[in-house]
Length: 439
Length: 110
Image (cartoon, rainbow over all chains, first blue to last red; front, side, top):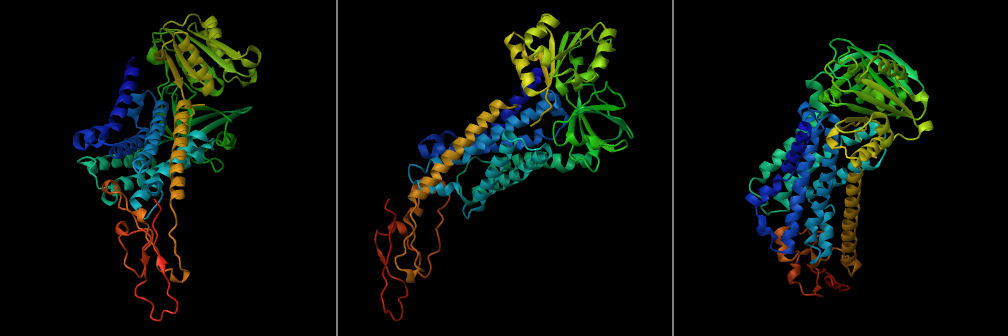
């Protein structure tokens, strides 16, 4: 419940900051006086959409900094990135409305003048805004509607910082050149603060963070491949990081055949083990190349991140549901829970895969379930049993009342189970999911 | 697929934006008529377009309207006061006018 309150307060804070320009316009600007006729009302709305969108745009950069306290507010870095995406999309919608509302006033008078207003001209203050808008449309379109390879997408996504710089030039220059109206007193102070927030977030993520905080250095200790799944164990060169089972890390492998971008992986080892186990499936251009890793390759580790851990609900019975490679955070959690005397509940793990050969850690789960009376393991082979559903989970794990559900796996798999759980009366605060596709 | 609702909202907004902005630009281009130069030998006289001057109400609220191209050799007239179909004579007049060119200044029909 406490976590839900934090998330709600986080969202309220974001909305209040985003809508702050509306307050400024009504309190220190023209306010309701602008709503007297069609031309001034549409112009007023255009300015509001622009300022609110710009504020949201700036906040998205703060949400991408991976600062720890943001994780605490939104319940894990994966949830912070979801918030970042939602806010970024909303910022684009607001910024799209900005020029449209500004030109609406010209349409009844002169359509040609309206057309000239939204096309590039000799006014660079406006052109900067047009560049920022077109760039933002292209980059967010790539993020939401294409399946570009991860490292290429990440490269393109960083150009949003450049678009923000163009937007900053637009908001500072536009008033002195083409718009003489006084939006509100202190406009430049507000624009300065918004610009600082966005530019700080952007430069912190890209340049400052890596210089300020050195990532932990590990090396590859062993690598095993079973079909299309790699099990990689890395050991610390100096001081190991402290983590909880179920969390994830950003890993950068230093191998000439693997790209150097940091990639998120769930930790598949028990809490605070010096060595970290990563289990990765060949799902894309990056993971396909992991077979090139050699023992002794240097590894940079950033993290840990995430709040996906059973210990927050130590008194409750729990159902863990994994789909395919979504088993990875549960591998360490199972090893923890069977030896955790502070845990008073029981755990039933459902592990859904297409075929028996795809099961990862099957022998270990079977062994631990026989040793411990608080852990039950149910492998689910979809090729023979059909898709796992809520009825089957109910039959095998008993009534759901006050049970906490932990889910990790493909998005559709999770969504189907979450929707069924909610339909069957489970509360959202009893459902915890790990998101591992950030896009 | 993640962010289903967000994708839908952003997608609809993008389509609306492209439709509205595109319509405005296309309609604007249709309405916009190129200035007419009646005499090819007299291309230095490029006519100003009266629509460049926005109604007073709009002028107060938005950017000053940008002239299309510099009007060369003649001082730019004030189009608001220009009566339609006014004959403009190039200044200074040609020293030896073998053929006298008349240039018709036209304003947009609207």
